[in-house]
Image 1: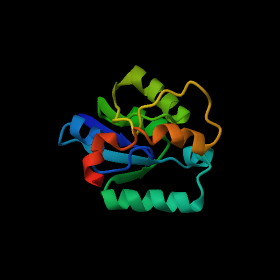
Image 2 (image 1 turned 45 degrees about the vertical axis):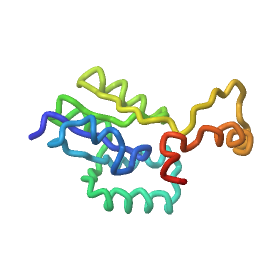
Image 3 (image 1 turned 60 degrees about the horizontal axis):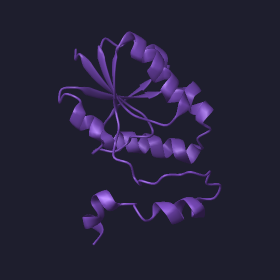
Length: 142
């Protein structure tokens, strides 16, 4: 049994996420299919199908369980979690950090802008964001 676990969630479903580099190589990755959480997110059926197909493509273990219960009872002492702006995941992470060693792994920001005002429309956001978007991998698009 490994001493570490990668807890994947819907904000980090890609093979090259930094959490895979930060965690030990023998570390298992798991996605917890929590029906109560998914109902709170109000995901559509199409979104749920996309989520499931992405997990299958990543060959990640999918466990149907309550997130809190699974993570608290899992024998791993260190849990690697991709950071997320999701308030529901943040609450679970705060509770988990009291019991286990939780390592939050952030990724490079898509854009670097200062939003000193509230963007009500995507156009206003994008008119500021497009100036810095993709700069970290701009050579791929030349």
